[in-house]
Length: 229
Image (cartoon, rainbow, N blue to C red):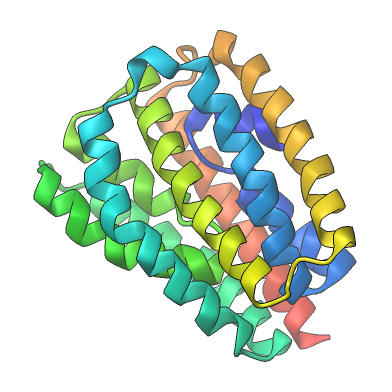
């Protein structure tokens, strides 16, 4: 389900799955599990829309997003689990007005803008798992739509999550159980993204906005509830 959703609107798998993974495994294991899963999920979108990738936009974003994500992971590993729960919950809820604010402004981004934004978003991705609600208006603001948007955003995210996983491995935060759970989750997401290709042009912009906002609100409240237990 999360893979199909992500394949249609470009984001959503991490938002939908993160509360479940936090409840099952705790936030410090849930983040690397989701990072591994996100690699496979984004790989599915890249393979599905390979010819549509804007490599210049992808490179401009990744050149700063990758080191930013590595720094974010290092920060995450130093935080206590309860703080991570609260940070994730607040972030998801706060992204609802932030995404709407970006969407209302006719901003046109250049390659330089993508590089500046990549550093900030990469750092956040290292800490909070998913920044899809931010990257969606950013890549659309660059001028990418439909398959080109899905493929380019996925290619950039693939590189960022790969950097995240390498940092987790370096600091011993990838035991076998985390790798196995990440691969199982990621395989399911990947299959869902392939299934979504047929419906990617059918969702209206208004439905897209409502689905993303609903996911962020429910996931954020779930994580805040978990932190209060």
